[in-house]
Each structure stands twice: as structure tokens, then as C-alpha cells.
Image (tube, rainbow, N blue to C red; front, side):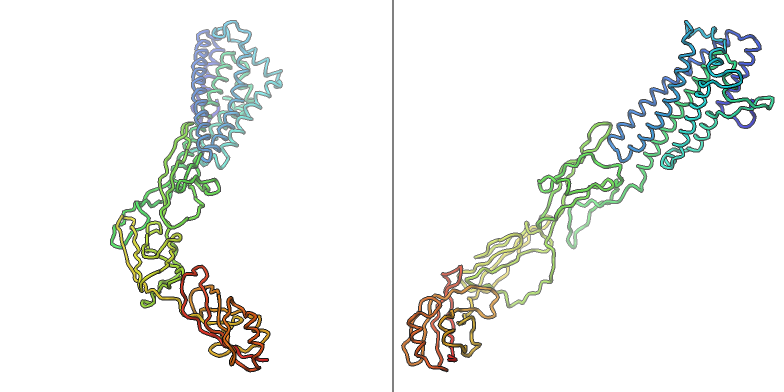
Length: 528
């Protein structure tokens, strides 16, 4: 046979040829025909078992692809391509074999399969090939080139260990090049293997080809899967995570967090995400899945502890596996300024709502409480102080640290009355002097009161006042504008004369029961 380094399969085929030659020389020993028949049976049995294994492999891979599509979908797609190519050639060979024994009454009687007529007549016509012979060659060539193309795919080659060796074996076992005979001459591949051989020998060769097809399929698929699994288990798909029993520690405590590995690759994508934040279900726009990580996109919320609970559902073996989630985070008020206090200026004013902020650094607002006479909570760390009696008030802030320790602090505030208001006419105070204005303007102007340089914007409503023109009786007015009697008195005043408005009465808007200090009077110099 051909020289050079031969594969075990080719050595076996060469040995078969020697036996065939001997058979021809010995006029086809019936015992040898039976021996080849038994060999064909054994290979057929091996093929049946290989079919079962390959189908089980494909079913298992389909389940994995359904459970973890990011990791196994591409592998299953290539596996289906390989299965289709293999099935095409296997089915074709099985059809040829069935046609060859269709006219034999007992297909297990191998001693009658000593003739070469069937495949000689099917494949050859003189020195040329029939269409059926060319189809046989095309099927072999298509299988070879298609399998080599898949194994040459970069994505497949990375997952199949020894892909080059498998390609070399396929090229050798399914080559249809001319074969060099012992005498040095060359013969076409189909003639060399199938012309003039007993039927049982040709059937056994085809069964052997089927076995090679199934073995190649099994070997490639198993190596593809093991390569994918090795890639998935690579440490490059992990990142370090910190697991700590609490989110904040205090000076002097022992930090007892643990560093561990967590999968971050796309092969660990959950099929379902069922999470809640503080009992409220998260919607799909509140999280994204990135490389196996569930990245939340939610507001930090109000200061305090927030719980994230629920289940992540993964696929395993075609079933759903629930992984519980029980974690959380703490939100604290964001510091946006330094705390600078004037020690002697802890003051609140009687009669108004004094806004206050009460917080303890490192403790969420929902773990802080404050108390004091006249103090009420607005929201979060915001409070309102409405002092009543006395000259001082104590405010106590209490909180609970994450470790359960309670702390409490008390601060004293002085209570002061609202300062003395000043009278205004037309919104002007005169700045310590008189307001200069025309007689007609005074007649229609409103009398008011205001608090100069006071920290609160208070609305003072004037309810009455006294009006005095020099040399004339004082007129008492209700409301905030001159009445007819006051206007009559004003009409008798001369140019340049000073008019006084005094005894101004006003009430605090929203707190009419509060008694304001006496309001400063105002004078007006008439300009006409």
C-alpha cells in the first residue's frame, strides 16, 4: 500500500485489502466473508451506541443553552451545524447500504455477499464514473471541507483542544485523492476502495466511514463544551467583593469585613430578577444586567437604612433555581457646609416659627429624635420651634448608633421677643428723619410697619393709628389709610409743615394673639 506514516485506521484498511487480495486468490473463503460480516455487525453496534451518546449530548447542551444562553447558545449553534453535516453523510451512507442488501433475502447471510456487481454497476461505467459515483465522492468531499471550515473558525478553535490534529485526521480519513498502489502507480480513490470488492467488504467500509463520522462528532463536541466550561471557570471572570456586616464603623472598633470572589461574566445572567427596595418591587428600568452583575439604578432615598430583598432566578438542568437576596445600604444626609456656631447666639424668637436642623453625624435621620418645649418635627432632620413662656428652652437630640449604642445631647437656647417695629408711609421709614412727600400723595398712601434687619420675613398688618397736624386736634384712624376726617385736617396744613403718624397698631400675620412692641412713629414733611 502507500508508504509513509499511516494512521491506525489506514493500517487496518490496508490489512483488509491484503485479506481481500488473499480472498480473491483463494476464490473467496466463505469463512472470511462471515468474518467481515461479523466485523460489520460490531461496527454497526458501536455506531448505535455513538448515536445514543451524541443525541444525549445534544439534548444536554440544548438544556444548558436554555438555562445559560450567554455561555452556551453559541456552542449549541456550532454543535447543531456539526450534527447536521454529520447526519447528512451518515444518512446517505445508510441509504446506500440499504439499497445494496434490498435484494438479499437474508441480510445476515454474509456468505452470499461475495459479488462486486452492485457497487460496480452503481458507481462505474467502463473507466468513467456514473452520477451516483460522483455523488458519493461529492458527499465525502462536502463533509470534509465543511468540518474543516468549522474547526478553522477562530471561536471554535479556541475551545477545541488539538483542533489542528482533528483537522489532520479528517483530511486523511476522508481524502478522495488518488491512491498510490504498491507498484507505484496511482488509482482513483473510488476505484481503489470499491471497484471489484465483495459486497460485504464494501458495506463494512461504509459502516467504518459512519463510525468515523460519529466519532469525530463526539470528540469535537465534547472538546468544545469542555473548552467553554474552562473559559467560564477562568479566574478572569471573577472580581473581589467585600462582605461586611454593617456599612459604617466608628473609631476604636474592629473592622470584620471579608474579601471574597464573585462571578462577573455574562454566563451568570439570571433568568428572572425579583427584588424589592424597602418592600417596593423594583421595575425593569431600575436595574440593568451587566456581565452577570445586577446594577441598580435607584435613588438613595431619605436618610436611614434601606433593605434590598428578593430572589434571583437562574436555570440549572432545565429547572429554575432561586438564589435569595438579603442585603441593604444606609443613606446619611450629605454634608454640604461646615458647622460654625456662635456660642452666645443660640437664640429663638417668640411668636414666629423658628426652623431648626437636628442631626447626629454617622446616624441616619430616622434613628435620631429631638425633644423640647414647643419643638415639632417637620421632615427628616428639619424641625420647627415655637417658644412660649420663659427666657430659655432646652432641646435634646437622641440617636442610636449602628451597634445599638444610644447617645443623647442637650443644648440650651435663649428666647427673645420680636424687636420693635418701625412705622412706614408708602413703604418708607425716613431713616431717622421725615419723609418728604406731596399732600395728594399722603392722602392715598398706606401706613405700614416693618422690622428692620430681622432674620424672619414677617407680615405686619396695620389696624389703626393717630394722625396729628400741628395746631389741630389729633385724629384717630381705623385701618391703614387716612379717613375723611384726617384728610380734612391735612387740607388745613401749610407747605413745609410736619405731619405725625403715631400710636400705630399692628398685628402679626398668622399669629394675631402675639403682642408686638410699641411701633416707632413716623413724620412727613409736606412739599406743597
